[in-house]
Length: 165
Image 1 (spheres, rainbow, N blue to C red):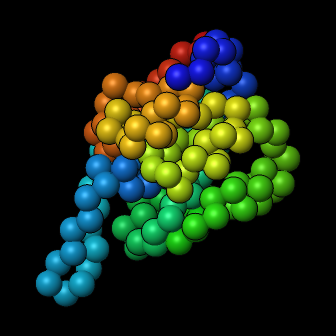
Image 2: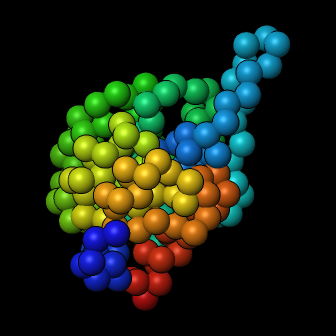
């Protein structure tokens, strides 16, 4: 973890970006006999997204994989910025930054794997789940106590909202 005051960094957040597999889910992918992909999402994370959006902080998704399950969950949570099948997450991030006129210090990103490292290094507040790969855990501002898909997103959101008062 970086030593800069996490609370001070969290106070500046105006936009939260999330990876999906390993962050909003536990990273497991279930495929039924018809080829349908199934994922599970934690209800606490969903309520946290509702709360942070209610506080005026927007939320977006940038995922390396594409899944109809993610489209449905994002729609349910009123997340309009959804980028799927993205191998260059920095490009998607730059599009969002430009669209919302954001500076790096105003954005938080939560990712868990090597593909997320370039973006985690750019944002003002970087976070990961307890079960992320070690390279990511060593590079971010905050490692949650909870695992991906098990309330890690809610833990981050609670921290940001408390820092903002």
